[in-house]
Image (tube, rainbow, N blue to C red; front, side, top):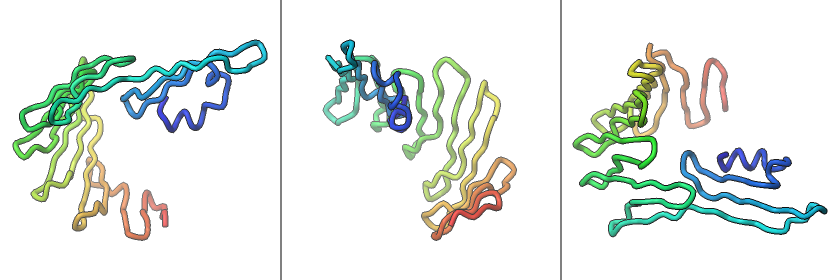
Length: 168
């Protein structure tokens, strides 16, 4: 359950016994509660993940509910998150791919000459499943396009325009 999901659903019976808090795939804390017969809370146990940085402040390991070792290249870029992903970087130290461990799934990133991300390709079992392209107006993204270059979203200072629906 993510922080947002818990904020929406932690009002029900399931929240009385245990709540897990995470941000994306990163576990933050787990709260476990006990109650007496009159529904009064009698105890609260908080389980967390302890993170250990190295001398250049790179997170190298986590222990607790999640146990993993993170690996970095000589430029300080994360190359293995210790659980489900490995990362590839180019010579300019830009992220070019994320590989999902145990699968042939992959996300690939392409940049323009100004180091702006212009394309993301998602692959499942080595087959392209989605392509998103980005058009930049100066330093702001102004259009999002699909694999066929059809505009899926236009962004303006006043708002955005998606699928013939204005949001401004």
